[in-house]
Every structure is written in structure tokens, then in C-alpha cells.
Length: 108
Ligand SMILES: [Zn+2]
View (cartoon, rainbow, N blue to C red):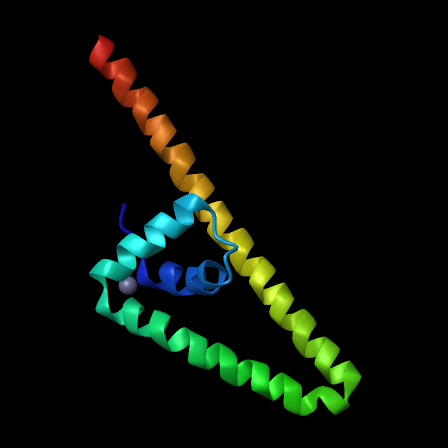
């Protein structure tokens, strides 16, 4: 199963945070082995995340701003997680339907 680069880049954050399902992990790992662009993004992700975390610490004197920043990050992650979950659910359903169709046809 090959994934679109945009989907893989979106899934890298949940993959890195250990929130990805087994299916997502395998699909992302497989894609990263084959795609140099996504591999580069994956390697840079830790430093990007580190910069974002530092910015939050800098603005920590303003508790409201910090809370807003954290909740926006959590909200974005939740959306990403839901998007990835929906994509894999759709792929699973499509695979099952395809299997049923092929299975029904081969019996005839
Ligand atoms: Zn890619």
C-alpha cells in the first residue's frame, strides 16, 4: 500500500508521538523507506518540534497565551489523528469490499 506524501507528512507527528495505530505505523515506515522527501521531513520533524516547544516556553510568562498555544497544538493533533484514522478506516473498508467483490466474482 503506497500513501500520498501529504498524508505521510501529516501522519509523521502522530507517528513520532506514538499515537499512530499499528497500520499507520507500518504504512508510514514503508513510505519513509521509499521516499527521500518524506524521510527528510521525518528527520527534520524533531528539530521543528523543538523550536515550537521553545517558543511556547518563551511566552510562558503569559499563561493565557501558553494555554492557547498548547490547546491549538492539541486541537491540530486531534484533527490530524482523526484525519489519519478516517483515511485508514476508508482504506480498510475499501479493501474488504474489494475482497468481497473479487471473492463473489471468482465463485461464479
Ligand atoms: Zn513521500
